[in-house]
Image 1 (spheres, rainbow, N blue to C red):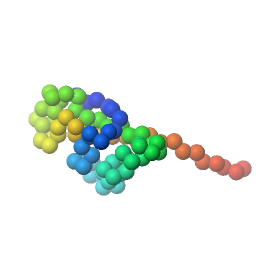
Image 2 (image 1 turned 120 degrees about the horizontal axis):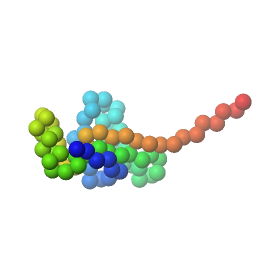
Image 3 (image 1 turned 30 degrees about the vertical axis):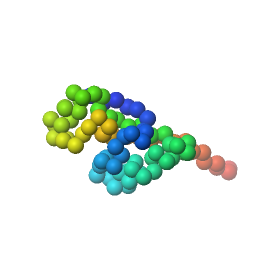
Length: 84
């Protein structure tokens, strides 16, 4: 029903809405920039194929298309130095 793939400029980031404004804004405005700079890597869940799009629409998500993001996660690395 869904597939996971790296975020690209072809994905419809503006239509994503998870009801958490900070996450919505980060995906829309920051995720792709950070990916291009190597700060983080974002992966998106998108419908696998046209039958999957139809299934989302049948479940009441009429705006879902083949490039719609239905979920995402991001990975980044960090280091904290602790002087002991």
